[in-house]
Length: 279
Image (cartoon, rainbow, N blue to C red; front, top):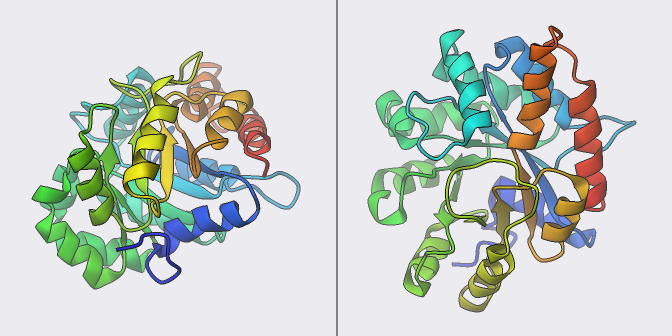
C-alpha cells in the first residue's frame, strides 16, 4: 500500500505532500491540550497555526496528557501533569482538534493507547473524526497489536501513524510503514522526548533506511528540534519536522512569569521554525 498516493495519504499525509510540492519540509507542532488550562491551550494551538501576518505550522499534533507518560521528557511531563491536575478530560481533546480544524490546519493527536481503549476504540475514532481530526500517532501501540485500531481507523477514515526508531530492524520498518496511513514517525534519538542543543546524528541514517526499504513512505522526524537552524537541518532530508518541547517551554516560561496568556514567545518561535523549513 502506498501511503503517499493521493487517495491513501490521508488528511495529515496530504499536508506533508503539499509542503513537498512547495519544495520544502512540513512543520508539525506539538502542544498538549489543557495547559496552561483548556481555553488557553486551544488559543495556543490557534497561535501556532499562524495567520495572515505570520506563518504557522502545517500540521498540529495535539497531545493528550496521561498519568504515566513513559515516553515524555520533563518539559512535556510538567505541562501534562499540570493539565491533569487542572481537570483536563478526553472530551477536551476533541474540542482542541475542532479548534485547530476550524483554522484550516490539519490536526492529529499523539495519545497513549490506554486513553483510547478506555474510551472505546470505535467511539474514540468516531468522535475524533467528527471533530475534524486527521488521525492518531500511537507511540505505545505496535501494528501487530492494532487490529481493533486498524478496523476503527478504516471505518472512520483516520490516518494511522506508527513509530520507528534507530533500533528498529529492517523487518519492523517494512511492517510498520505498510501498516501506516498518512506518514511514519521516525524517532530520531533513543530515549524520552525533549529539545536538545544538537539534532541526532542517527536521524539521517534512519530516514535513509526507511527510504531504501519503503521508498513511497512519507517520513516525519521528531525528538530534539528546538530552533530554526535545526528545523532546516532536519527538513533537508525529512518530509516533516516535528517540534514539541521547545514550543511548550515558551508556555512554561510565560506561566512562571505570571503571564500564562502571553504567547509572544510561542508566536516568535513558531515563525522561526517556519522560516527554517522555508514556509
